[in-house]
Image (cartoon, rainbow, N blue to C red; front, side, top):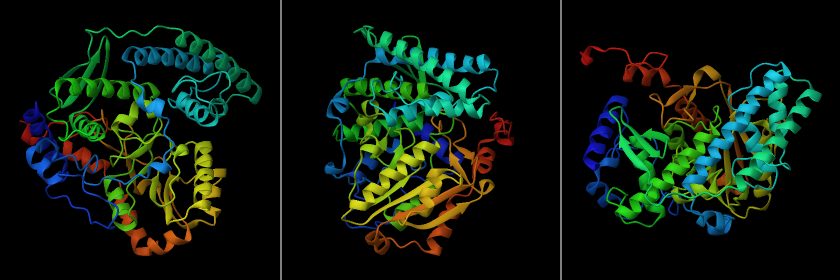
Length: 463
C-alpha cells in the first residue's frame, strides 16, 4: 500500500506544483522552538510516501506546548469514541437540521444558510455547559440560531418563538439519544478502499466518509506521533492500524456532521510559512486535524481530535508566552469571545505573547472594534476581498484546495511589550504576508484542468 500511496502522492505533487520535503526548508528562527521531530531525516529516507505533503501541513516543525497552559479534560481525552454512537449522533443532527430548514418555511422567510446549525452549535457550546459535543440542550444559548433567522427575514418575536421550539425539540432528541444503547459489533470494523481518483473511502456499516490520500497519510503520521510510535505510521502493527482507522472514521464523521459553511477555512501554507519565519508562529488557536498546519493545535472536539495532536479548545488554552495564529469561525459572537480571552491572557502573560488574528473586516461588529481599538493591537493589515483567498474548509474531499475570499480580511497583530521587542511588526513583513495571501484558485484550477464548476476539461496530454 505504501508504494501505491507514494505513486499517487508524487503524481499529485507534480500536477499542482507542491514542493517535496526534500527541497522544503524552514529557517530555524528560535533556539527553543521549531524543533525537528526526532529521527526525521532517517524516517523520510525510509518512507518516501510523505515527501509531497508539505502543501497540506508542515511535518518538520514540532510545536512546544507547555502542559501548564492546557486545561485538558483527561476523561474526554482518554475516551474511546464509539463508532455506533457517532453514527447515531449524525442521524440525530440530520433530523434536527431538517427541522431547522422547515423553520424558514413555517416563518415564511428566506432559506437559511447551510451554516445555520453550525452557528447555533458553536455559540451554544462556548457559552454553556456542554452535555454533548454536537447536540444543543435546553439550557444552551440560542442567539446564534436567532441571528440566522433574523438575517433570513424573521421578526424578533417570530425568531424567538421558533428558537424556543427548536431548543425544546433538540432537548427531546438529546434525551432520546442519551438513553440509547450503542453496541459496536465485534466483527464489524472500518473498511478502507483507495479509489482511482486518489480518494480514500472509509466505511462502517452503511456509512461512508472520505478524504484524499494525501490527507490520509498526513493524519496517519500525526496519529503515529501522538501515540509515540517510532515510524510515521506506514508500518503500523495491524492492531494500531485498526485503531487509527476507527479514530479517523469518527473524526471525519464528526466534522461531516457539523457540515460547515466556510467556518473551517484555513490560510494558505505560504501565509503560515511567513508567520513562522518572521514571528516564530507555529501553532493555531482554531483548527482541526484536517486543516491544521502543524502537529499541535487547538480544536473544537477534544474527544475525536486528541489522538491527532489537539490540545482542546482555545478557550481552555492559557499560554504565558509564544506567538499564535488565530483564524476563528467567522461568527461575530465567537470573535468577541476570542478577543475577551486573548485580552485576559495578555494581561497576565509574563513572557513575550502575541496573537496574529485573521477575521473578515466586519468593521461595525463589536468584536472587530475591540480588536482594532485594543492597546495590544500593534498593527492592522487590510486585504481586499478580490486580492486573496483561503484553503477550502473541506479541502480533504475537494478537487481544488483553494477558494477566493468572500470578504475583505483584517489581520491584527496583538502583542504585549515583550513580544513587540521580540517580533517587531515592520512594513516589510506586512508586505511579505500580503503577497502570501494572493489568490491562487485560478492557478490551481488551470493546473488540474478544471472548469469553474470543478469538472475536468480535456487537455492535450489527456488524449
